[in-house]
Image 1 (cartoon, rainbow, N blue to C red):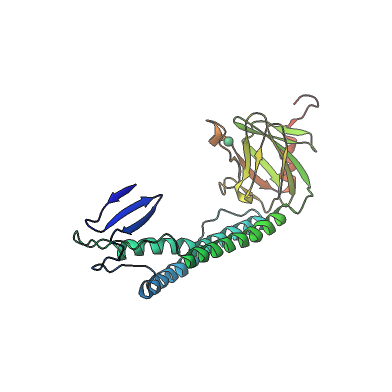
Image 2 (cartoon, rainbow, N blue to C red; image 1 turned 120 degrees about the vertical axis):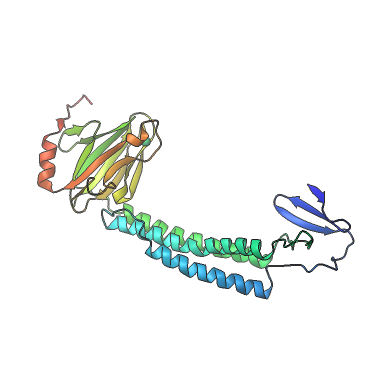
Length: 288
Ligand SMILES: [Cu+2]
């Protein structure tokens, strides 16, 4: 798109977000002082604002108390990883916002008579390469740690004290305790013994669901025709009545009943768990 915007000497061309001033006379406009962000004073001002916002933002991200209750030490490590990502994102975010707002204020058109053409350029090697190197470096660094290192730690321990089979269906959770030969259909409440490493074998009867235990920061898809495994170690006794994050929740939009696919969880001592198990329905072999 081309549009004549300057009475005698230039055309403003806009193409996919880039603006260019083409001078028809072949020379720079004499009467106009071109404004640029990349002069010494603007760079210093932007840097100071960016630094101030970054210090405030990193401090806030570090101290923000936004995490739900953590059910074990791995949940706290997931929170630590999230906190680190937030803190690393702050300088990038404040950099973009500072330049955006500063440019809007500093280079705004001050009067109707102000016809100073905007400073335009297609590229600036230093800015482009600096941005590319810094953001790529950050991305690769967090991919390795806490990305791969954290994932390895979360999945390293492949032993379990107990197996729970979780079958999702529109719109309920059905749990079976194969080692105890009992099951719980359309569960409203689920008890789990404290200090126990549990392997959930997760599948679905119909559509894709997702087994999520917010207190443990663990989630895995329930997919028809396959069984996915997720391991977690329960901590101290606690129940849904004390904290709503002590629950199983479907985390995959699975239809109109999706929000109802939650089960109140109680982490209890072994004795109470055994009593509760004793009251469940026996699994009859060959009859699901
Ligand atoms: Cu769902």
